[in-house]
Length: 183
Image (cartoon, rainbow, N blue to C red; front, side, top):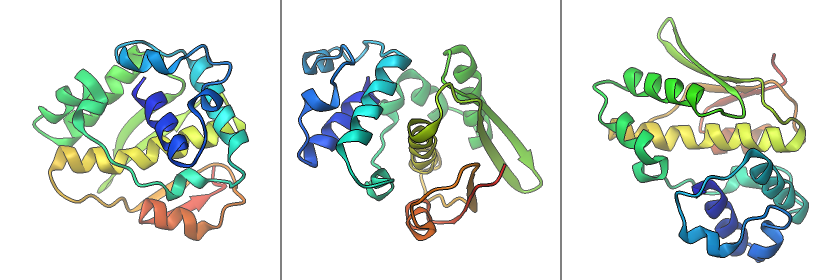
């Protein structure tokens, strides 16, 4: 529900009504008061489809400021922040992710001095899948900063699709080298 609320509020700031953002999702603004309410994948996908049809600017979300708190991640966030190491915190997230019936597979491994977080097998593709992948990776940096208590900068981010959005927009958003179209 936090993601639904955040996206709805962000779109409201851009002048779009909550009703338009939540159209055909079965979610009402009054549901926002029930933060523990579960949102189905179908509802989340419909909300993102609505947003993409309302905004006529590809990858507009790459320009949004990401603000995160541990409470945004619920119990998982608190479990991660209490971990002894960042690696252990990420392993907890991956393990939880597998039990949560997620929309994609999440894998974490170390490759030399690099830590690699890989998302695969999205249940939805196209613009919605691209939005979701980019949204997830945009949120990882602020989460890691919360866990470390210091600035975090990834070395590179890769997506296996091409985009009409200029690569410089991606580089500014992720603050690192970004590769598009690599499998």
